[in-house]
Amino acid sequence: MAEGASTCIAVRGLVHEYRPDAASAAFRLELARFDLERGRPCAWIGPSGSGKTTLAMLLAGILLPQAGSIDFEGRDLTREAEPARRALRLRRFGLVFQELELVSWLDALENVLFPFRVRRDLGVDASKRQRARELCERLDLGPVLGRKPERLSQGERQRVAIARALVHEPDVLFLDEATGNLDEARAGLVLDLVLEEVQRRDAALFYITHDRSVLGRFAALLDLGVVLDRAERLP
Amino acid sequence: MSGLLFLVRRRLVHTWRQNSILCLALGIVMFLPLASTFVARAFEAKFHERAGRVPLVLGARGNRFDLALAVLFHRDLALPTLTRSEAHAVESDGRAYVIPVQRRFRARGWPIVATTPDYFEVFAARVARGSLPLQLGDCVLGAKVARELGLDVGDRLFSDPVEVFDLAKPPALEMLVVGVLEGDGTANDRGVYCDIKTGWLLEGRFHGHEDAQQLDKQLVLVEADQRILKKTVVEYQKVTDENRDAFHLHGDPAELPINAAIVVPRDAKQRTILAARYEQSRTLQLLEPSGVARELTDYVLGIKTLVDGLAVLIGLSTALLVGLVLSLTLRLRAAETRTLARIGVARATLVRLWCLEFAVVLLLALLLAIAATLVVLHWAPTVLSLS
Image (cartoon, rainbow over the protein chains, first blue to last red):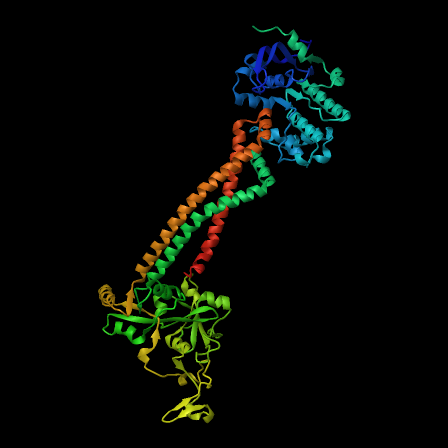
């Protein structure tokens, strides 16, 4: 653990095995130990199919491993019930996945505000609307705020999904190839914003990418293939 | 909840075409049993209320439903006639009094009911302006007739000619409006009422023309003990104070035709005696309108049961189709649902969102069905000629 950083998510003895389809061989992911720390943005690289997205889903409590523990602030996510894990994600985590889907019947701004709409304890007030607008402005989405997803480009959709992940100031951000559809300039814009938010909130960042040119901006760099090779094999 | 309501509203607006079709389909399914129930009840209430006012109706043998509907609701049903003397035979021994009714002609499309002043008492029809039609050529208008024709006391109203090209038929009669009835939402509002003699005048039994002795000889067909005039002699088309006394009848007054007679027995016993007397008659029938009303409403309720049965089947098939539509919709929204689940939206929230959406569609469909039922209830009495 780096000096001054606090562990946000601690993984111990993780084993997850699944078969993508009947014809394929079973995929087995093992991770003996891993700590995701606050304030130390962590970039994950690794070959396609190495299990980066699966690991992100496990850490976010979307998937449950066959063995091991995933500890978030003293709560073992593997022992939490589905509704509790969902509530945790909605309140504390921000997620952007490769298969991003926006709500087709809401415009870009309302998609960004969506996490507030579905939370019973929150509504949308002027300050939240203001924050959503500021994020969108930073992501160069100002002119398309009133457009529905069907009228947005793939890159614009991706940026709306990123704004949605950031709007409620999450403690942990999971971004899975979140800039994959963006040009270099816009990808830089997005990364600037994400890193700024992480620093400001002292949040944890789990950033999956294939773009090696941005790796220098992260405090921790992990190659999932290497991690898996080096991980202690579980009995 | 307000956040969910916001989302539901946005979703419904976004898919308004599909939702409108769904609302319409569900609304029609709800409308059928609603409308059939309320229309049947309204029909039953109106029919029984009016039938209850008339103790007995005497008419020529024929369809008893036609006779009752013609007397109670002014329906145009070619009723066989009975003679004035046959009707008055009922009251000859003091068991009852009769109110003659002739229901054959129309004035600007509205039914003319020729009768006597007692008729208005039986049907609780009160004059709002003017007086009852006591003189030949006078008429009183139902409230709706007066309103729709824009006529009032002192105006004139032509009867509709029975046959424009047949000179043998009586010409249209210009009647004087002497009164307008209070509107009461019953069949009273939809009639033009005149004295029974005016009815016979419409029929050509009564007529008036210039004094035969004073006419030009060219208009005389035969000159013997009496002068028989040619048909080219124009009959009076309106009754005035000057010519009223000149109207006359050729023939036996006892043989004047009427379509029906309302019979008001002195008491229940006389009623029973009269009913028994006419039971065996081959030419006349004496019916109790309440009984006919019961028969007709039983018939209507039978049809309603059939309609309800069909509505259940339609409802079932619609429910299956709606189920299919909803399942396809959920499948179309699978990717969106998966993402929402990943970002942490609770399953219960998603279910609430879908249920609220469907509940709003159902509510709108119900409101549509109620609105359509109210429209039908408003027009049904007119369509069924019950008011």
